[in-house]
Length: 254
View 1 (tube, rainbow, N blue to C red):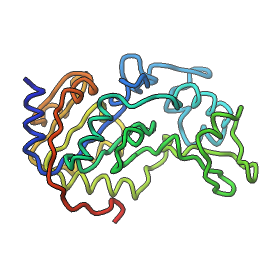
View 2 (cartoon, rainbow, N blue to C red):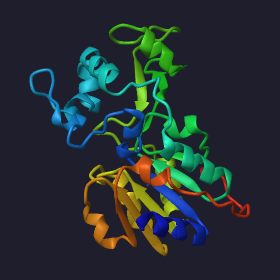
View 3 (spheres, rainbow, N blue to C red):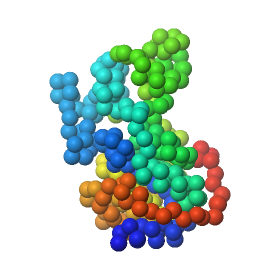
View 4 (cartoon, rainbow, N blue to C red):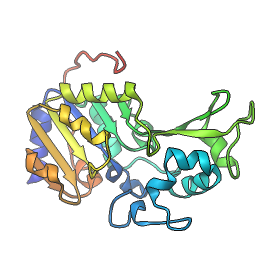
């Protein structure tokens, strides 16, 4: 019944935005951060937490340990989009979805074909040298041992992801908040909404309908027009995507 209600809301909406977290990618065998078996539950290197290891200060103080953890727990280059990613890409192609706002760094939305994507926490595919600024492909990080070095100057390469203690890219944040403010249907899925400032993006929503899809109950459920407890890829995978008239969409950076 809930899936039928979601279908009806999508068909009636004029502008839809999707806001997703780690639960969108667990169907692609990428572990989440805060679930029952998430990375938050693990400790390493003398009891350090995930937040400590993936912090800006730890990266600069112990880049070797940072990359050891990073390669093991955050890099899944062979992961493929699951039905949730594919449905969202189809929704965009059929003018049914204005944008995807994601907290994920895995690039699976883009791999599925989505173009209007706001990666609030950056991407594992965007790496750069701290010395000369050269952009480096993920393969450079994967092929290297220890701390990856720039092929041009030998400087330390850092991943283009938002580390704990850093603010998200302001241009991406501005675009994401603008999209959320303009939509009449917001679908929030696979996120605990415990990470700031990403979670604060939802305060910009003043549209008609809020849909929450998550395996565990959340506080935001009380505000939702429709709340579905289930796996994101299973819920979205049942949708029949309607074709909608092509609207006028400005570039997200404008």
